[in-house]
Length: 320
Image (cartoon, rainbow, N blue to C red; front, side, top):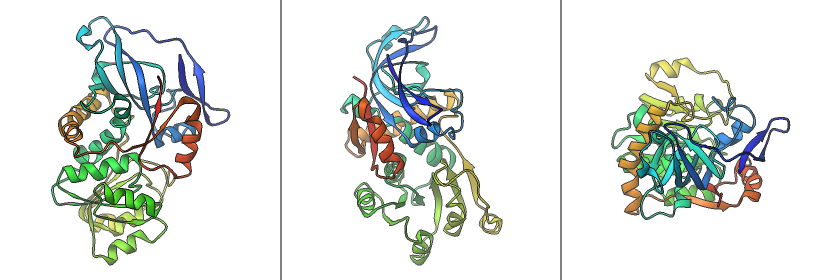
């Protein structure tokens, strides 16, 4: 079968041929319909993503149909349309995993489009709902607002009754986010911290995939008792922090990546996804935000677009 791996010598993605996996006791096998592309893939290709060293294949999420179950697994799983949240290897024709990291695909949405929901929405749920304990009417600043996680976060913030603001890379991306629920936003090429301070805005929660390049500016627009969630390394792996702002504002800083969470946490997040998000998808209150669908021979170009910052919303790859 085809699976997308990493050529470490060239630091690039590369298709590989591997045997079709067989299920062991307690496992299921999914014939993959589609898989999501994520910025975490780019970091893995560079050897920078936490927890990826032992996983040589790419892809954190997919959708498909269960075609085989192992001993001890209820055969009622067979034929079920599902989404899976994996630690790697999702960009393949088949994947084997535990049922605990699988959720039934939302009704009324094409199975291929569902491939782009798990990673982005569970990342947003992990940071905003589980960790930051977001409350109604709180203000949330979302960096990289037009990314897959960013657009999911904008919509989740609205679902939870809070108010999302964003930064992003172009006017096209800003317009895209405003159309999906962002209250306001500013281009990252501007002094975004000064812009928000000029509006008299302070944020209760800041969702930051940049980290190193933004942390000190985050502190200048943080409200008292703000929670800052760093979940990416787009700005590098280290920085200096202004502890005066950090301490005087009683800021809580935490870092969470979805990939390194145990299956028990992923199971809880998938249950939250099914309870909070799926009904909104079915009612048309939430958009899947899949804006690009590529075939296997187009995936390297899709990663280049992502690396250059040209991506808006979510990109998925069709595997069938």
